[in-house]
Length: 232
Image (cartoon, rainbow, N blue to C red):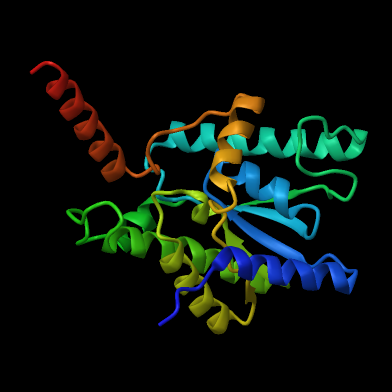
């Protein structure tokens, strides 16, 4: 079975958008400002873009609020660029559109229920799959209710996330909710590298774990292990 190049699939759809002359409405599920930085820069020239912030996996309230504030700050800066026509240091220009944000309820309790029994799964395993499906299901539902043309997620920009799995989930939900899924592998074509550059450019907070307590504990164990190996 041939491996799908999701980055090329994105480009095919964008080619169709260029030819059509109308900017489709896209709901972009965002996990955080750093990951969305390149995605928004890239997509805002072709789509009428709304960021959907739904991340109940972030189990600490202060962490959730800080990440959300950084998302809003970056969107405000991107919108300022559009208003002033100032795209210095950016890979997008006069064709860029302003970006909206839709904030979903913060419900870590429901997330805990969704991953119950999967607490001991390794990072990237069944717990992560349940998490992805919960977040993308809410995005699909919001896209259907808001009559968007497409929905997708910034999660594919991370080298730590399984882009094939995310696209598989997205396409299944697309069929269920009747909204087109925008396939993606945003890390490709130096997308992840660009997100790091933009994070530095805008001074964005870059966390070193996805947001859930299990991921945070795994990072802390890894850091302690690295410190221990240095001392031997």
